[in-house]
Amino acid sequence: MAETRTEALHQDAEGLDVQTPEAVLAFLANAQIEAAKAVHGAIPAIAQAAELIARQLKNGGRLAYAAAGSSGLMAVADALELPGTFGIARERIAILIAGGDAAFHTLAGGPEDDIEEASAAVAGADIGKGDCLIAISASGSTPYAVQAIGDARRRGAATIAIANNKGAKLFDQADVAILLETPPELIAGSTRMGAGTAQKIALNMLSTLSAIHLGHVHDGYMVNLTADNIKLRDRAVRMVAAISGRNRDDAARLLEESGGVVKTAILLAAGAASADAAEKILEGTGQKLRPALSEIEGSKGH
Image (cartoon, rainbow, N blue to C red; front, side, top):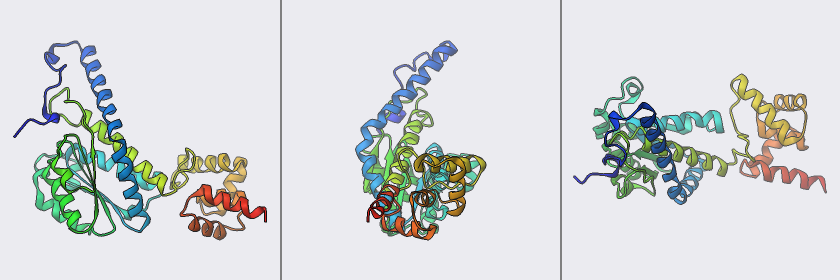
């Protein structure tokens, strides 16, 4: 098997173990920065993938992540944040990680080769037509990820692959292939570092752009957040106040009237007759706040 980029030796690795601590850390920091830069080359593919995810979610489908090892942890980090940040229901998200729940205690290497487990996970989550599965693998050849994306595709799901090597096997089963061409790791093959950093950035970009397409972001505000703690309830009040131009007391009252729904509270502030009326306007605009506000403003002139 030819050596892949993710397994190659970094140009600064020679003599690394006898360098000063400060020099080692500088090399590590620089390697992370170089890895992060690789994401720029993937922007067109990430944009295409975000449209695909948004379309599937908008039409009632689910979003699934499939990965092993460090890539699995990157997937989990992205997936678990989506309900709180963007209000995407937890039952609309599936996380398939090699080793299952045990992976959160012992990230063993063996499960990443278990294609039967991957098939069982896809079937168990009932991934199929209307859904979208993202498979992530630094090498692009991890058996668990390759099997999962293949099964998902055969079951009719849309598929996205993220890998750090050109010509990755994972790309063969993908509707959209995202290549993150990161440099060799400073510790050869330790893809939890540079490759993982690039994956995390790409997943952040992917899920955020998908949420924008779905109307979950207005200006720089996460207007579809689930305000389930003190910090997020305060953030919701500040968002309503900032976007509507009302003071905090008014914003808090409108939020209470809306049942804690930020977009509904903002439309109430803009002149919607009731929370129900605001929600009907949002239904008509595909849950997008800006055209909903324009509709209320337009109705005032008639």
